[in-house]
Length: 305
Image (cartoon, rainbow, N blue to C red; front, side, top):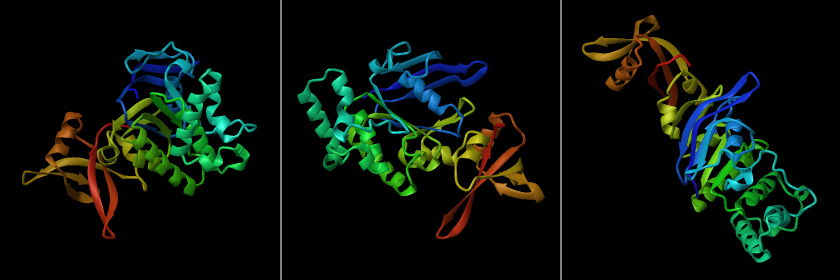
């Protein structure tokens, strides 16, 4: 297992800045999801951690060791790609163990690690099959097994379920959660799917346009969005945005919205707005249901994004 620290990490492609001064710490054993829309930089950040993105700004530390200039094979990480990247002419057993063979690991050790991974991923009946004879979910488990036998300190997943159908995605989410609970390994998971991030991750890193908008556990991200981007991005259906102004009525704080409607809010919410230095702001209104009845939760959100 390993922890991860990113210090002022940035990446440019010519005049385009893909990542801007990313600072993040991921503790040992955490399942951390990078969540954001397409093009926000989440996969680029994952590739930087893996050492596959070429030159970049800033520092990458894994378990306290500066790996910024270290080759991917020496970082103690294993990556699972969206495309599976299996060798079509090799059977399942060879696909899983090929990397170990290339490293010169003794056959007895390879056999032991292969048996353990096959048992954990329920691949034992499939070891002699080739990728063309497997379902999408089975191929994904083979790709995970190939990473598992390396016994890395850090697992990296780059949208591994996006090519699967809905039923398989649900099944594989359960498999990944079970795997994390069993290994207690540090896992970084890139996705644009809110359901995947909200159901699997211990913490979510919400990204947009090359920078981090908010870091927090799923409920905090949902109930206390840091700005308008997070409030609008998280949740289905999207939150409603209403222009509002803080007012006081009989010493009770409230929001005044269009049409003169007053919505009571907490003292903590008023303090949040005053600290942000804004006298007007937008209120988000997320609808949930309790016993089939809609219940609205007003939340002030400062900031322009």
